[in-house]
Length: 85
Length: 404
Image (cartoon, rainbow over all chains, first blue to last red; front, side, top):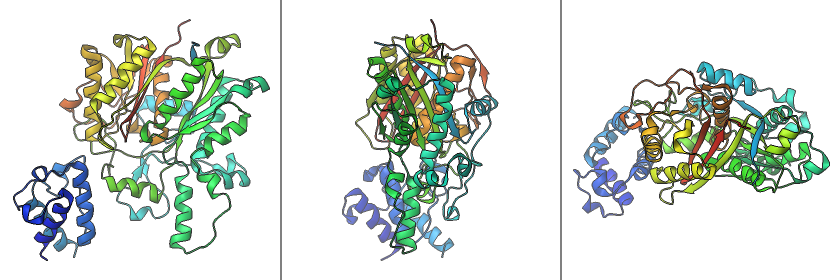
């Protein structure tokens, strides 16, 4: 499974959606994932990819990990996997 | 109903080993947040906390006592000794028969749990010390204080996360006010600065890696602390009759629940707690000169708390002072309200308002007088202490300068 598909599967699970209903352009808000859901999704992503995601819930905008959309999360995970490989 | 006063105070925290040293640090705006030191700390992403350095348990307690006292109990006992000594109370048989202890803690003996889980899970040991249970139990600190002073009235421990000690003190106040107990020892204690304690908090991603900056636009989270604050609550007529030095009067409190979210604070829940506490104390909002804020330094708490203050106090919100001393001693979780009560006493008794240190950038969502960075001299007759816990459980206490 590609990184993109894996991230989509994780977010879909968090949002109680079928992965086919999660588009790459969706925002987490559109998926109905709240702040607690974000923190939990990042934990699942860290475990799945064995990476550390720099994310502070107090400063989501400047944490160095863009959570605005599914696409930005996929890009962030790909970057962290390359950096932390 | 009886009037209730505070006749003794004691503490151990990152700012000092006693009340005078702590108040000195609060006046000077000294930061007690330091690099953490304990086993496996290098495996944590959070490396700072309001850790008490130089606390000499070996000197304060016997080897047998240490085998029974988790660090949170040690802090509570040292703080209680200071408070009881200051009160000058002699717990006679009759007085001790009805007096008790109510303390708050969230983690209890969490470092005892941590050490022993490590022993059995990581090190594969099949045997633990026989006193693990009496050492880790949440009521251990309250029990040892009751035993130490022969207090045989109502004693128990309250656990409501960050509001634990305010709930404990509110309950103790109510017991003295109602006449159930002539004297109550009340406060809270916490010692969560161990690998497991901080690792659990890291998971929530609300801790700051560099500083606790309440109300500052660039705040990035809370910083944990540890320690205890313990007080002697006493019925006013009795205290006056024996010529006690009265620190201040407790005039009311309120407790509310948000009933909404397990971690996100609610403006309505906080506002209801403050408004009802003022009503219970029969205090007009305009009389409040100082609020010791919950002020954790998280985005969510600080803006919600400021909005709640504006709801309750209206135009007076801009005139009163509100500071968060967590910027100096860190967040003592279940013990935090007790240590923060010292800032309220300092405001009422000494006319010194403790600052919010680490303040760098104004936040339009926190546009109140947060006493940034430097203490201020001011006459204050009424002070509030706020505590708004995870789980949406709130407790606010109203203190007054003593007026005969």
